[in-house]
Structures are given as structure tokens and as C-alpha cells.
Image (cartoon, rainbow, N blue to C red; front, side):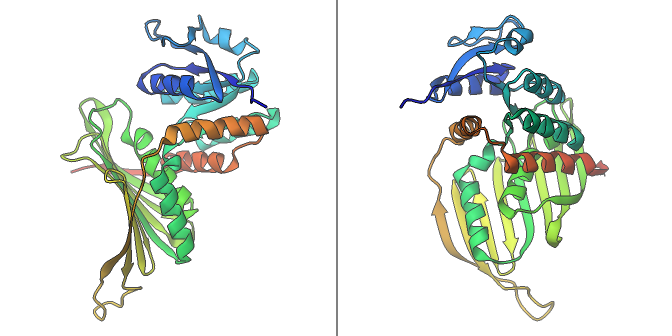
Length: 315
């Protein structure tokens, strides 16, 4: 029996909203019914243009919405859509505070709807492989380090909210640990209040973490490195490789020389992580199942940024 497609709308047609609209129009699980953006000129050819947000809220045939508007609008739009009976996929971050994340999740659960955050990197096959290798090792996790630099253009938003969120979500996902405290330094550039930032964290179980994010850099980097006791697992997104190293386990100061020997390297096949994320969203809707792990990660990411102490700008 052929599955009935889910009528969906996209709210917000900036570059990412248009990417999602095009992707949804090609996926068999959805029918892209409409889009809405406050800028009237923003439209897509393969969907009708809703005259207002209310037109989407009041349309009972629309069962789901994707929200890709500015960060500070996410929470209010998510609440309005959920109250109208729509399942929602909200671009990261879910909200600006952990309390707002909790409210959105509680409302979705109460109404039997799906509220999911678009942490697309969690569907990256390299991230999934990294998680599997760490779990199979059975070794204590000591540190997680990530660097995401040089994406081609300077955005208005802080890199903490637009770039660091990817690596925070990855760290929580692959290690299963949540941040307990955080500190950061940031630097403005080109009108952006935080075009570069470094964040330092303490996680559950004694794990530490560091995330470097930058709109401006001399070279592009997409690295994530998990240091375990006696092993290192490294993901390089640009070369699509995951490497594993055996290391000197817990070296003794002035007695052991640290060493790292590569014991395995995996080539990660190209994969459409965004299509997988949207398909997962459709599955949660069909099964009437709330995405609990996604909600925990989304909240934890927002909480880490919310509690992070600003210890000053770069000198």
C-alpha cells in the first residue's frame, strides 16, 4: 500500500529555507504545499505562496512545517504552529533559552505532535561512524575537540549560534555526555558581534571539550577529534575520512613518551544527510512518536551556550 504523503509548508525562505523547500519537493514522503516569507519576493516555483502565516496556521490540510527564520523567532513560531496542530522541524538552535526548549517539547508531547530540531550533522555518516567506533572501544572518553572554520562568507549571527551548535550537538551525540559548565572568548569582525569564538567545556563524567568556530580563517577546517584513554578517533569532514589511532594509555609524567599510531582509516561515502533528517522527521510523524534524543541534544546545546561565561575578547 502506498503511503500517503505529508502536506508540509516552509516558513522562512532565506538560503537554507530555499534549500529545504527544494529538498522537500523531491522527497516521496512529503508534498510541499506552500511557503511563507515576510519578504514577498522570496518564492519557490514548485509550491504556492501563502499570503500570511495565519493562512498556514488555519489550513487543516497542512500537517507539518519547517521553520527557517531568524534564531530569535524560533520559539514563538514553534509554539504557534504546535498550538495549531502542526508538527514542526525547527532550524537550529531550537530556541534561545533552555527553558523555552523545555516549553516547546512539553507542548508537543501534550498535543501528540513532533517538535524536532534540525541538527543535520547528526545524520552525517562520518559522525555516525565516529559514534559507533567510540562506543565499540569501551574506553573512557577524556576530551572532545572540534574546529569549524572558514565557511566562505561572514554571517550576521554569532558563530556560537550558527557554527558551534553543530559541533556541540556532535560532541553530545557521539559521546553521550552533556555539558555541565562552559566558558568562551569571542571576537567581532565585519559587523558580526562574534565572527570568531572558542568555547571550553566540562562534561558529565569528567570529559572536557573545546570548540573553535570562525567565519574568517585562512583555510577551511571541519575536524572533530575524540581523545579516549589509549585511543584517538578523528573525523575530517573535508576529506570524508575517519581515522583511528592507538596511543600511549595515560602516560606518566617524565616516564612515558606519548605516541600515536594510526591503526585504521575509513573513507566515508557521500550521503545526503539532509534527506535522511527529513525522512526521520516524516517517520516520527507517521509513528506519532516524539524524538526524545533529538530534544535532549537540542536543549543541551542551547543550555551550554546559555550558561557559557564570556571571559573576554581575543587580545
